[in-house]
Length: 174
Image 1 (cartoon, helix red, strand yellow):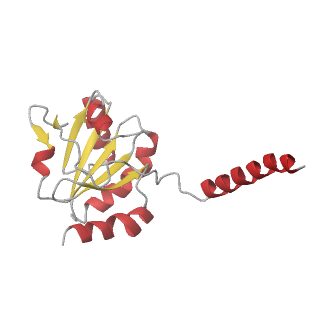
Image 2 (tube, one colour; image 1 turned 180 degrees about the vertical axis):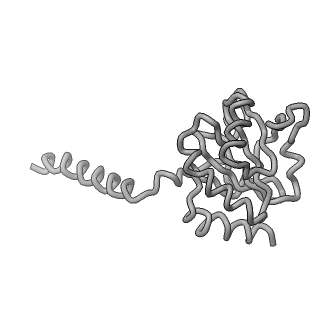
Image 3 (cartoon, helix red, strand yellow; image 1 turned 180 degrees about the horizontal axis):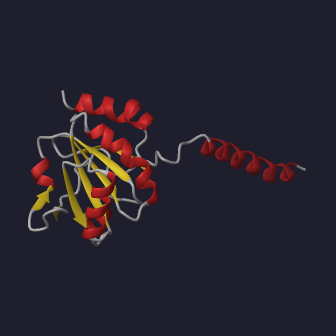
């Protein structure tokens, strides 16, 4: 008779795990890179490919790396928010044009506005892979020492800016 309760007990445990999982925000997948140095990279600037930007150039600054692409539908939702946020000049914003053609990225920025202090081309997606990008858009807040402090999966929203990103920027700039 007691053996009959074992499947019921297992079902109950699974039900508890399911309930916990349903309360979690899927945009807050923990990144193993948080608290670790950002991957080192060097990439051509989107507008002037003869010039390079290196992650070492960003040491000493709090900066936001935003991955995007002209073919990305969700990037269109995020872009006006970034354009508006860039006006605050709160920090340097670097755009990483992920697996895109340079010309397409340039035309996209010309059409929708350019919130980036610098945009770099990640034509083959290597830099994105090093950062653990699951899909665009994703953003990384990096401190003055080059350590990743926050990762936003999916579009940056006004709520994410207000509640998480801006307070963390202010803390990191102290």
